Image 1 (cartoon, one colour):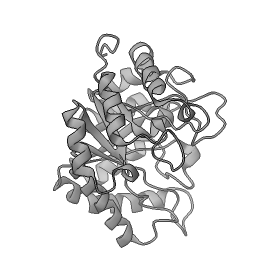
Image 2: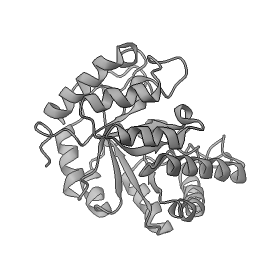
Image 3: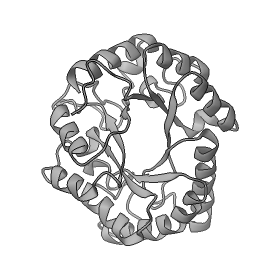
Image 4: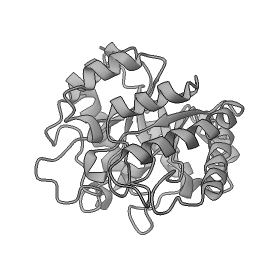
Length: 285
């Protein structure tokens, strides 16, 4: 495993950790201020959300690189299935716009959160088939713009309305079906910490299909499954064991801290949050 105590340049900030992906949350720092704060603390990369980029993708991407940060990713595509994704043409158009934004930023990866159970269906099987069909339409478009697509399975608590894709196994099955070299997975501690099949599935994925690794923690007494994530070390996830599996499968990229915390971390000064991230990353992850 990599030695983060003496070199934390693998640390990446997902700006959602400062509350910037939801209106009215966080300190609402401009992207430039976030970039400078990360660079000053030795972060190696940053991941943005579409809502904060707007029409400034080229400008913000260049600004990050001039500060010494790579743009590790962009969050995220629209939902591809579910009640908000009935119009396939509209969904694909918005997803292609997200791909264009990622390309403008110079982001290595665009994350896909697939959406919940599609109207008129029960369970997840039919919805996952729709996901595979729509991802197959998007993958060549993304490849033409040098953008990788990362399917992110979410914790099963979100299966109904946010992600019918709940396991790394199912994500890799979609990758096998689509057979696109720029399609892989994002592994988020919050969503996979419970999965006893994780190590085997990561070995199945290998280094060529793991496109991202996201850090946070699962609080034992979480009060909101969406907006009460823990800072690394505050919960019950075995962070070092998960990283050992991720790196054992060949992943050597950024480790992206992504913490949705409306009543704790989003209420704090962003500088304090970033300082805690660095310390926890170096010592606990």
